[in-house]
Each structure stands twice: as C-alpha cells, then as structure tokens.
Image (cartoon, rainbow, N blue to C red; front, top):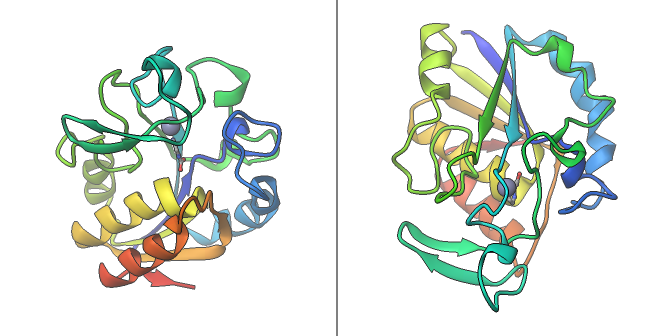
Length: 198
Ligand code: VGL
Ligand code: ZN
C-alpha cells in the first residue's frame, strides 16, 4: 500500500486573525508537520478564489455572510471574502512545512463554482485533477488533516472514499467551523461513506 497525507487548506484566512477563522486552526500545524515524513507523498490543498467569487456574500446583493442560497449546482453557503488569490490570507500558515509537499493543488478558482473538495468542484462533476495524480503514483491510502473538518476536509474525504481510496481523517489534526450542527452532520456523512475517523 502506498500512502499520502492530504493537508487541507492550512491557510492564514482559516486561522485566528483570518477572514474565515476556524477556532484553534493554528493548533494543528505542528502536529501535521510532525507526521509528514511518515508518508510516501504529501499533498497540500490551497483554497484559491478570484475577487468577487460567487461563494462570497459580498458578490450577492442583500446577502449576509453564512446565509445559504441556491446555485445552479445546489445550495451554497455564502462566506466572508477569503483566500483571494495572491493575498496574505491565501498563503499557507507560516509554520507549515510547505517544502515537504510533493504537490500543491489549488481549488475554488472557477468564479461560478465553489470547490470544497480537493477532488471535485461543488457541481460534483468538474475534477481538480487530484485523483489522476494519486492514481498514477499508485497511491491507495489517504490520511486527511486540516481545515475545516465539516467543509473542505469532509467533502474531500467523502469524495475520496467514493472514488475507492482507503481514507482516514485524523480528527485531532483538524478543526471545524461547526455552523448549525454541520460538524455532527459531517461526521455522520463521513462514517456512512466508509471514512475512518481517528
Ligand atoms: C472552506 C469554506 C469556504 C474550507 C473553504 O476550507 O473548509 N470553507 N472555503
Ligand atoms: Zn473558500
């Protein structure tokens, strides 16, 4: 078996002080760095939105952050502006060992579609290319860590399990947004998809 560590969105905007701060987001960085060398491959994902991305509340008239609208591909939470390409907020946390990464995959660059998952945009069909990368490297087992447990980690883990990868989420190396029970729903969904939560 060949194992990859998938580090989801450990970026300044998801850490305290950032635009979409996840409580305790910075607490997982040292633990993630410490396990990187246990894997055959390390992949980082980077949320990477253009200005006026359709997932931003500011791109819609009369829409409050954290409200939900219907997009052509389904319901979409509207977020504060975050992870805008090239900004400080879109950079990885300064302590993350980015030099250990084999691949950095960016997502959310399509102005009209959000992309929580590292594998598919939120339309559930447009691929990011990560599946092909992992398969051509013979990788079968994925361990996922990062931010946020209930959004990007959750969607990535469920997609990976549905694609046939063996998936473990290290909950101690993730932190959640947890809006309106989203963490409990995400945990149940991941378990139903066959993701191991440890
Ligand atoms: C994320 C909301 C919007 C995440 C990204 O990384 O979980 N959440 N964009
Ligand atoms: Zn985003």
